[in-house]
Image 1: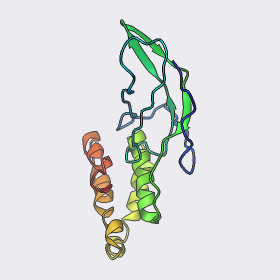
Image 2: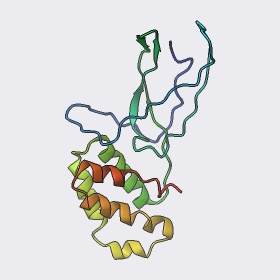
Image 3: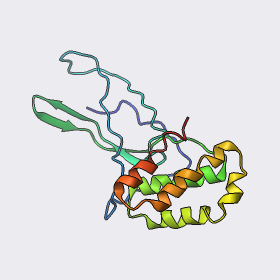
Length: 163
């Protein structure tokens, strides 16, 4: 079991994940691969998933393939790459998405709250911005007010922003 080629390079920069002491709010993306049916000993298949809106988008990850046959699990060698991410030309949107990723990877990332506090120092200036930018104000306020992991997970899910 192995990758036939490395995952495509993407993202503008690479972030290392230090699992020591981190408390992820959102689990790493995990999904089944679409493989041809039957009892084949070899073959090739391709699975495509759009992970650009996932909170881990833009993060450096280790891809590990796993297979389970008759209760016997096997794992591939890890392949390190950066998950694809959306590109934002608006500085505020980019900053909030970066803070969202940091918070999703570690609920203890208090620097995120300080950064979002700074972004919200003059919300009246942000409200005069075009609609796409002003749509980020509510999630930023939600992050600042959240006190539990569940509240943080709700605001880390920016599904309404991606539409």
